Amino acid sequence: MIKTIDRLTQFIKYAGLSARQFDLSIGAGNGYTLRMKKNHASIGSDVIETIIRTYPQLNLVWLMTGEGEMIKKGAEAKSLEFDQLPATKQQEIEKIIEQKIRERQENELQKLLLDVTQEIEKTKNKD
Image 1 (cartoon, rainbow, N blue to C red):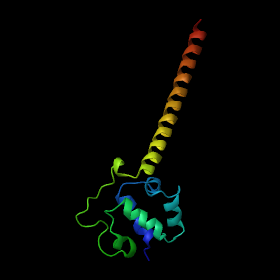
Image 2 (image 1 turned 90 degrees about the vertical axis):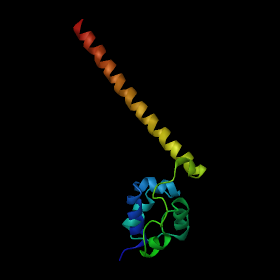
Image 3 (image 1 turned 120 degrees about the vertical axis):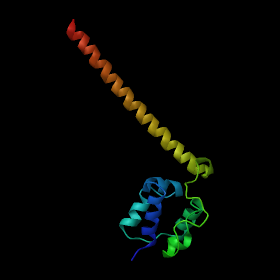
Image 4 (image 1 turned 45 degrees about the vertical axis):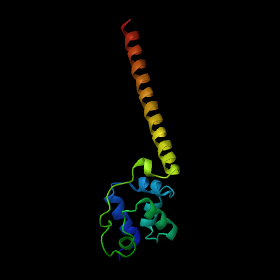
């Protein structure tokens, strides 16, 4: 029997999102969707309300029953633009982006430091 969580997983895949991206977009805890899927659990009504507010193109009847089409007729099948997300979601996304940028910069600096150190060693060995 296909449950709501299974249909939600189909929608997440259709929307081109990872489970983590989806969880962040609805304000759920990290790993919420995957945990619910693994445990074949039911999704709470408060979470469903948030999903429908965040993804208005998603057909609620399809999500709950499997009847009809996944996407509402006439609805654009696209993700919300960044500036359409609630301010709290925008802040969460910005924090994640900033963290990723810092991590990338740190990795690049460490690689650069290693390269410079190796060049210095090569120069010392030639003398």
